[in-house]
Length: 419
Ligand SMILES: NC(=O)C1=CN([C@@H]2O[C@H](COP(=O)(O)OP(=O)(O)OC[C@H]3O[C@@H](n4cnc5c(N)ncnc54)[C@H](OP(=O)(O)O)[C@@H]3O)[C@@H](O)[C@H]2O)C=CC1
Ligand SMILES: O=C(O)CCC(=O)C(=O)O
Ligand SMILES: [Mg+2]
Image (cartoon, rainbow, N blue to C red; front, side, top):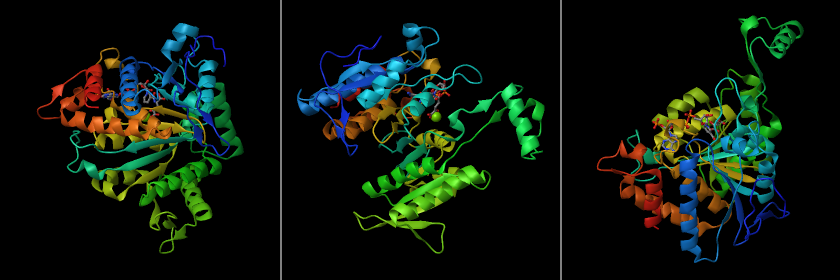
């Protein structure tokens, strides 16, 4: 067992491990690390832990139990490890060694200050898929007339794009050098205000695109989905977003036997399990943004780049009730870290007010990921009953007729009562 500086290893429980074919070996008493998170993390994470413990206890009569191990990042880490230590090495190490973990949101300042710890964790562990399902539950208030028609699974590339964090401030030596290089060696004369421009770099690779696309198509096959849509802005950013589209289609052809439909570029891939065809298509991101509102039923699995995926996940969440009910997972081929789509919502921090469902549903994805289907199903069943009971947090209560508003922990209790 590793020795850590501040992480307390539970006295019972074992690590989840990975077998040679990358499948998980999950003991009945796994140790699972969690990061509480900044802002509303202090509210939602304890509620998530209670709800998950209740679902596991009820589903397995005590035979199975999660031994939670708190690991630290963000503001809590600076209080423990020192003012400059936002993401201790031992946190990354513990998350890697324990294979499956869950985290609350972490703050990233706008403009200056530290770079995103969320992105740093994804990069350090090469969690290259950000998987965000968008699903409607009956009774959840939505701005749409037919919210159940929005049923998508977003595969957001999680390791590249402008999110790589390669940017240089206006006036910095690096920005000046890069601008000079572009002007002198590449003949670029169209930087409108070279003296006062910041510069950002957008790396998008074939390998990065292909591994993301492989997961998206495989997901469509495994879950018998009708289509995979590549969303990009390839008309403007030809060699990054346009290449993402082309490499995506290329991968569909090369590895999944994709055939052109009517001369292309759309393709069809045969699902070897169901025998049905999966349409692989693409949409330019702006057009896609209007179609998800007007014709959401036409979209199922979506594969996109990092920044598009960030915007789209909140926009799609709004269609089915908002980012209070928007879960997610960050995945590599082995390590998985589950986290809500939303951030730290600082104005509500510590008020026991917000909706804990995004993090609870992220935990539900985690339970399914480790094969604890009964506990995951129980959480979904209880969620459905809890929504129909109309005892909900402020975000739903303000849009629901006849609702009783409950606190964040109060909603956790409503869910436990409905198990
Ligand atoms: N993965 C992560 O850890 C993420 C971190 N962040 C970080 O979080 C910080 C705050 O970001 P911000 O732009 O305010 O976005 P947030 O997602 O934190 O919050 C925006 C709004 O969304 C609603 N909301 C968020 N969470 C919930 C919830 N659990 N229940 C109900 N409603 C919710 C609230 O809406 P309303 O005002 O209508 O009540 C809130 O004001 C930033 O530092 C950002 O970088 C952002 C996204 C992801
Ligand atoms: O890292 C952050 O602060 C924001 C990340 C984010 O918005 C996301 O992953 O959806
Ligand atoms: Mg986001």
